[in-house]
Length: 324
Ligand SMILES: [Zn+2]
Image: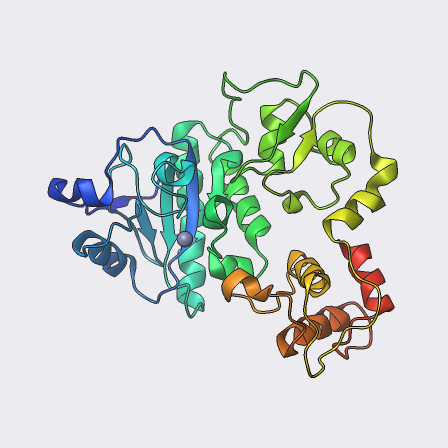
């Protein structure tokens, strides 16, 4: 059964503040509110405050409430006045994410169904779904990210979409160039699967051509080969360039070890969801081998059958390389 949407739209007088521009949406962006308020309260707060921050929908454990018309943009992705996230994406906030628990779980479940419904209505595929983080790097949806479940949430949306009889991939836009040789430079918000679809190449080809082991680890500005001979034989070395892990022993010392080599260790840990300090600025990737980094190393070691001493050495290095 279709999910009913309760409308409680901002007044027209507030359009210039909350949704200044007409919009033809192309994406759906998922957020966590980082709050423990209901959808009703989130929307009424958004409607009545004097900040420009805005979003289209708030979803909690019982209902979906719409606060902005879908033909107007919202200011929700931090990518600037002309950013694609702000100007071309529908913002969906999932409530009760701060504390989590059953209410959050139920809100996320309803949001998954609702996003699938939005996709179905538009004839879109899962490739239109983004997380806030894709647009400007903000750690949002924070709860989904910290629990390492973004792929799982996307898969759940895709499954719902299938159940609704929707397409799982969007029609490639007519302007998208087909693979005709050459390269593609990764832009903000891109996912490897979206790039693959847009250019008519398979994910496997794209990964093999570019030596990408983990499709979630493409970087803005990275140049991807779209055709050509596979570089799979050089996979290990391209992996090494991405996460050039230092040799030697790293542990908490006084003074603490600092620098780019520590940063590389932290980045590798974060890529595997062992954040030095999730929720902190840049997930705690600060180039300092302090107690938090040691703790992340310890957690990584303990789930990978290593001695969990929080000391980075050759064995931890090898295990990180294996997992990346
Ligand atoms: Zn957000």
